[in-house]
Amino acid sequence: MKTFIRAVLMSLVFIVLCGILYPLGITGISQLVFNKQANGSIIKYNGKPAGSGLLGQAFSDMRFFHGRVSSVNYNTYKPEDTKPDRNGKTAYEGIGSGSSNLAPSNPALADRVKKDLEEFLKAHPDVRREDIPADLLTSSGSGLDPNLSPEAAKIQIPAISKATGISTADLEKLVTKYTEGRSLGIFGEPRVNILKVNLEIAGIIKL
Image (cartoon, rainbow, N blue to C red; front, side, top):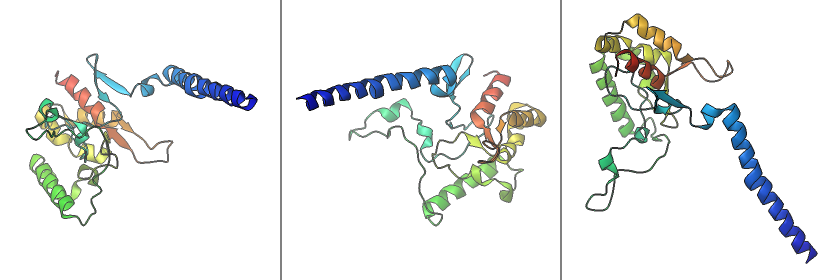
C-alpha cells in the first residue's frame, strides 16, 4: 500500500510539474520574450492580419512579386472547395506541408516546370530563359517557403515597375530592405520575404 501511495503521489507531482507548471512557464516566457514569434509571426496591413512572415502566399497579380511554386498550393481554398460534391467529396484536403517528392526524371515534374517556364517568359518577355533562377521554378521542402533569392526577386522588377508605375530603383530598394542575410552569418543563403515586399507595394499603390 505504501508503494502504491508513493507511486500515486509521484504521478500527481509530475502531472502538476510537467503537465501544468512547465507548459505555463514556457508559454509565459515565450509571450514575454518572443511575443511575435510565439503568436505566429503575424504581419498586419492597415491594422489587420495579412499573413505570417513564415508562410508563403500565392500572388498572381502582375503588380506583385510572385513567390516560389507551392506543392501544397499554400493550403489556400475557396469556400466552394470545402463543400462536398454529389459524391460527398471535397477539394479540401486539410492543412499540411511538404514537397511533391517527384524525381527529376518524372515526366509530371518536367511538364510542370516547362509550363511554368513558358508562363514566366510570356509575362517577362525581356528575360532570357537561361537567366531565370532555379527557385522560381522549384518548390521548397515545406512547400510553404515565403522567401526567394534576391536574384529571383530582382528579375521580376521590370515587369512589376511597368504594372505599378513604381520606378525600378524604388523596387530595388524594397528588395534590399527585405533581404535577410545568412542565418548567424554562415547558414543558408540570402533571401527576400515576398509577403513583406508585396504588402509594401500594396501600400504604395494604395490597395
